[in-house]
Amino acid sequence: MIKVFPRHKLQRIDGFGGSFTEGAGVVYNSMTDTAKSTFLHWYFSEQEHHYSLARMPIQSCDFSLSNYEYISSVEDIKQGKLDFTRDKEHLIPLISDALCINPQMALMASPWSPPACMKTNNDMNGGGKLRSEYYADFAQLIIQYLLTYRRYGIRIQYLSIQNEPVAVKTWDSCLYSVEEETSFAVNYLRPLLEEQGMGDMEIYIWDHDKDGLVDWAEQAFSREENINGINGMAFHWYTGDHFAQVQYLSQCLPDKKLLFSEGCVPMETGDNVGIRHWHTYLHDMVGNFKAGCTGFIDWNLLLNSEGGPNHQGNLCEAPVQYDSKTDTLKRNHSWYGIGHFCRYVQPGARVTLSSSFDASLEEVAFANPDGGHVLVVYNRDACEKTCRVVIDDKETALTLPANGASTLVWHETGE
Image 1 (tube, rainbow, N blue to C red):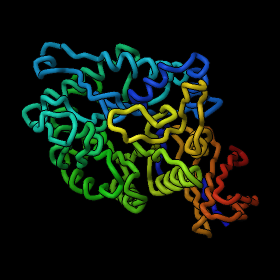
Image 2: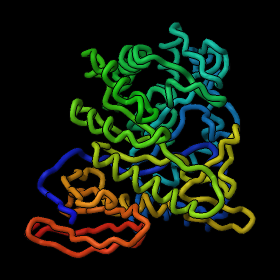
Image 3: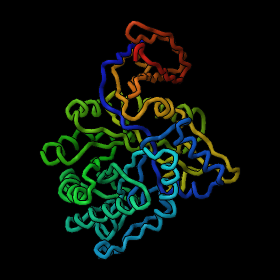
Image 4: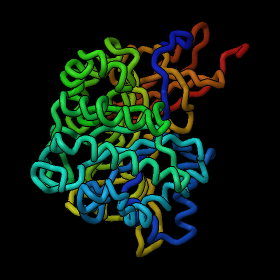
């Protein structure tokens, strides 16, 4: 039996989406008009996934064609000589086309690395740190980025300070301690946002794997100024479940958002690859939302049939991939897995209490702003499962095939 308690409401959901990267933009620009239209319809139309969240890099990331930065020297910032050529070519057209279909989509921007000239290793790759004497300059660069995008009709609502701030990567990366990240956020970036009339911008820290969430949060929010200046924690899934850490923070920091900001699966071949990828998405999404997650942003929205392009060879699967030789788009298992949530759970929904008698039946329930209710159930077992779904004084029977999922939607009488 699965029990749902629709009036026991928990955290608010901001939405679901994926990431605009230069790699995705390059593939998009290579597509025929028909393929572009289909891609945009699948992701952003009300009839399909209707994505309501998206993320993009500030400067280059691993899924760019190469390292690139908006300046060649710190003096360029003071003189207003920022070069957004790469963004204008590969990111802004794709983002603008998506916003034409869903203008209500909220956007998040994240740096993978400051410009090389501001770092201790003088390189966008390989870690290194942002030099303390350049905190103010890098904050100003981010402000100029936000203002430039606004001039193209793209308003960004969320910022994270650094993608994966404790990871040294062979691609674009930068290291911060908790003190360094929160100081940059609260003492440098937040005041400039206020000056520019962007005080409602949400700032997220961590933006890394779940296994480090609690340690980072406990240090960050031990200071009053950080509680007031930082809106939440962003996290990824690459080190496993760690749902207990998400749940602990949702209880200890109920006023802070817990946003899933990146996840992907590798390009693989062989038996049961699709089922493994399907499991990764369904299992993690159910577990995160049950634990207190407030939104979901997948990694690349679009890649080519090889899982690129990028400048480091760390290829991965995207929910939608394009084969230029045959001019065809392929929807992978992840696209359908995400669809069990994003097609039915509206921005502003609340997670509601639910429970299952069988650990192999993973479930999470939502109450939508329009009065509707949603229950997603995933059968992670290798055999068919049948159960009763009980909602107050009503019930229904549900049968799920092996590794199958089902989404139930209903309105309560009188709503």
